[in-house]
Length: 149
Image (cartoon, rainbow, N blue to C red; front, side, top):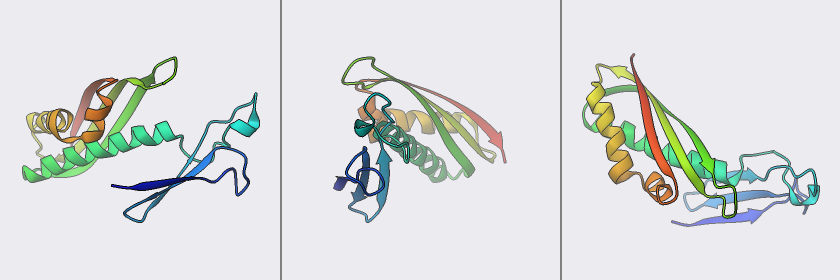
């Protein structure tokens, strides 16, 4: 897997903290830093997600992908799945994630609660490389709600 991340500055200038990621699969992702009132030249312009927000979103996408795939492979009629993530970071550098909570909202036709619990556990324990990697510094917890579609 490869990715090239290039500093873009702010709106074509060479100030600010904007970045463009180009993935090997041919997609692009824009990121920006947080504004810095004390040193505006060192801050972003809030034009895109922060890199750490992007990392958190990637973890959510990775685990939600697993949950849907595991349920579908179990022949369950999944209609929707979302994962809301909330995280805390260390106070000092490196400001790694120290706690992440994943809340899954899943709907479908006749999905047993045990099947959803199993899918989340399998993602958490075996398949989701992103959350397993982040679990090296963060305590990861999960919860879910299951509704009939």
